Image 1 (cartoon, rainbow, N blue to C red):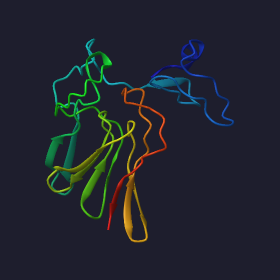
Image 2 (image 1 turned 90 degrees about the vertical axis):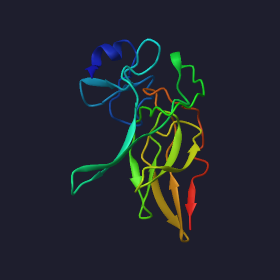
Image 3 (image 1 turned 120 degrees about the vertical axis):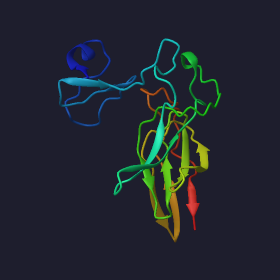
Image 4 (image 1 turned 180 degrees about the vertical axis):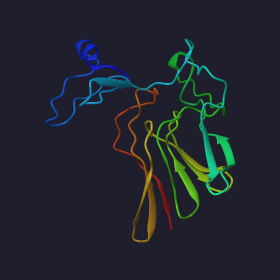
Amino acid sequence: MAPRAPAEQQGLVQKWNGQGNEPPVKGNFLPQYGTPYIGMVHPWLNPLGVPCNAPPWGTLTAIDLVKHQIIWQHPIGTTRDTGLFGTHTNLPLPTGIFNIGGNMVTKGELVFIGATADDYLRTIDEHTGKVVWQAHLPSGGQATPMSYQVNGKQYIVIAVGGHAGLGTRSELCSGLRAAIARR
């Protein structure tokens, strides 16, 4: 959090009176309209662009809520779309990667997550935590997937558009082009 007034004076966020659409935001700032503050979202990286703590840099964890125990925990994501100095080296090291967004669990005991900074939508087996399917998204999918059904087919979709704070791709696209259809 940072004070709003200096950020507005520097042009980091625009003023908005609450009418019409919110002004576009540049960079990794969260305008927090209606408050005297702005937020900033970014991973803690060293000068080389590498997280400051040792891997895994992101995990997905299943917890038994009755026994209060971790059932499984696995690194989620790779370094594929990240790299030193923001170079996006396409080197998919299985380190887990920072993420922001939720996941969704289906009746079919599958977990869908698209929150990782490597721009993948993944399907995880609820019981083992193993990845059973994945697809590279056209832009960052830092959002929670959703499910809907048409004529007996289940579809999974996710909003894509990137996240400036995580440095994920934000190319304009017409939404997710394809998802999973289950019979």
